[in-house]
Image 1 (spheres, rainbow, N blue to C red):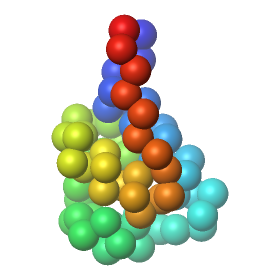
Image 2 (image 1 turned 60 degrees about the vertical axis):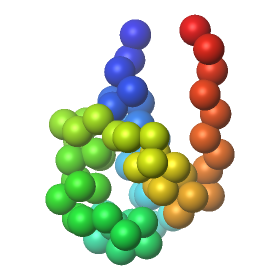
Image 3 (image 1 turned 45 degrees about the vertical axis):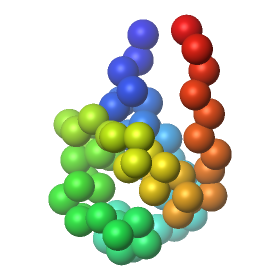
Image 4 (image 1 turned 30 degrees about the vertical axis):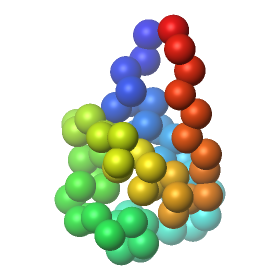
Length: 68
């Protein structure tokens, strides 16, 4: 099973690139540091629920939590 950090990293990177945003532009829009965005996209940092919500809001995505 894929980790949350890995799944989130892939989703954010894909969505950011499809909108032709740089990591810097996404960071500014989400009010996050560039280092945070880099770490989240590389999967080296686990995102908090608040961070997931912020990035999804900026990228126009909906957060859906599913029970196991």
